[in-house]
Length: 213
Image (cartoon, rainbow, N blue to C red; front, side, top):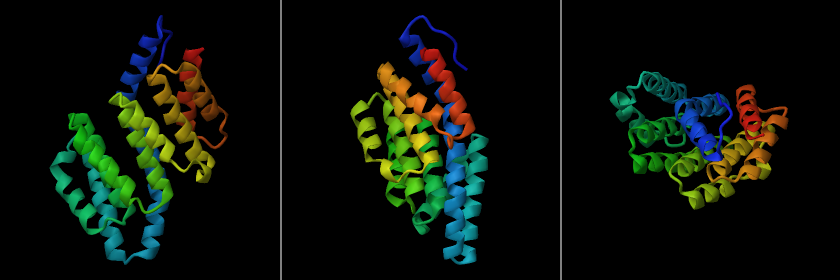
């Protein structure tokens, strides 16, 4: 993924390009893992028809998003967000829509959906995913204050090890984008040392750490 670069600026640019191509897929995988547990709880507490509908809408939007055609069915996602805002699938839809608008350059719409996901997430795990997504979004916009403020809002004391790895990774990337190399290296090192970190996330963190020397 990353090679040696003559300057730190080249290193930061390379990470930006890699993230734009692959980073959101990495976070999508994390979202699906969290959503699987939250969705299971939702199925236990809701009538079958409601849960089945919410699940099917999210799955349909996920397929369309992979095809680059999310806009064709965005209305169905918005309907789910309106009718079942407490559903974990509605949070998942909001995050898919945020990514969709972000890629279109409609940053305000993207931010609105990130904020909706944070406000309506039915559990702390999904809320944390949304907060980390929004922090990374702010960093891409070079809104450093907002990025740091969003990271500060994450309830790190309650995070399990897997979630802590995600937090450390995004924190390290935000630091690196600000050219805070020492802080970035410390964050990536925490991910690598975390025995419960997702294997893909740990591998990427190791590559970035190696390249930073």
